[in-house]
Image (cartoon, rainbow, N blue to C red; front, side):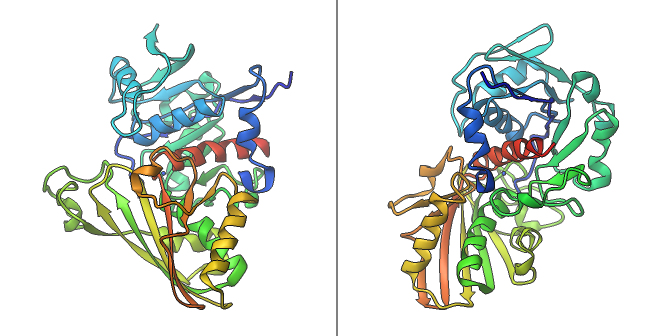
Length: 375
């Protein structure tokens, strides 16, 4: 039997995390791990400050990938409620496993997970829990300085599940090969939208060149929005009822592509529309190409990437799909061949779907696996 031991990893999560959610050079490391015999041991410690959307879904993703979760931190949710929240999900359905509590621990499929309720990251006993990695998803501790608080608690590395102002940013399938374990302790997994946009932009730029582009994401509402009209001092429109409106919003996802694909820095920008759906979003990338290409050639390039070096990250479909068809899809980005249009051979509109919760959560888990493979 092949045995792998990965020192415990941690994840820090929050119910208000704003989803502002490998296969590339390693033939899908996560798929390989899933196919290992049952003796495989991978230990991941999740450390949510709050057991929020991304926290619970990262836990699901880790369990699917054979990663053992050893700890969770949440100062606001008691253990009994944590059992309930993980067991039931209005969007992704009931967890099809055993969830209970025993001796102050969360038990999932027989795996005991320690539960902490510390307010400050530096106070969470990651070291004593044997945890090595933290996934920081509160949306609060985004900078290298703030995320480093987890190191004080005994963690060795932190993955921020949101864009960071100063941490190195990685998108699986695009630039994870730039990760340097000798110098990078705090890293960012970017945003769910950047994870959708960047793989598509990479394929187009590598094959045809992108002179300039505008992106619009039609984005599902998230926990930071209001169920009915309420105060939102920074952006007044964000305070309007999420179920009642199409809400124009800002996003840094397009500009962030320049951080993971430096050749596109300054060539992309974009905006968002928040719409009344609970999950699954879609990117509209309108770009001017350097090299003329027919829409058929663009489709072929995306299909080739989806079935080759970007398998598992970039998907491809020619079906007549709608948003709900992608609930639970684990790809970062699914190119919709039938939805795009071309004005001419240099000016095209490309469409790609993404489950902004579940797809992103799987990339968080994959980044952790990739980082460990470089230890």
